[in-house]
Length: 178
Image: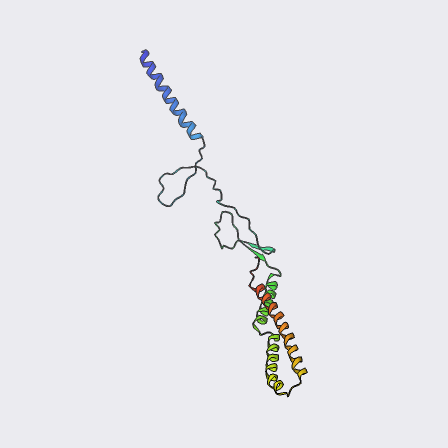
């Protein structure tokens, strides 16, 4: 009889221990990170989950403006290039058009030959035409000297215009800071 009571006592202790262990395990919260993958589910676990974003980013715009429309929805996945908001551009289109007109004008001026270059060619041709007359004695030395002086002045002017033109070209080739 002692032996039977002892076996019953051990059985009850094991039974109550198993019950206690099962209940305490069910009441405790376990957190674990799972790596998502495509395929068949191998195991299903019930519970509540909080998913944190992979990355957070501040939204900035190069120009200020008033928010006209927001297309953000909580929980929506956003990819690169997706429109998330539209700003009222205010004066920006007019400033862009003005900048484009200024750019076009500078391009046109850079493509056109400089007036100083054309004038320089005219003076060079006149000097070339006058040389045989001067050598034959049909031209006054003062006229030839005056034409040479005008040619030197025009060369200096053309040189300054070329330098200005190169500066403007460099400005057009420089990328904008935005």
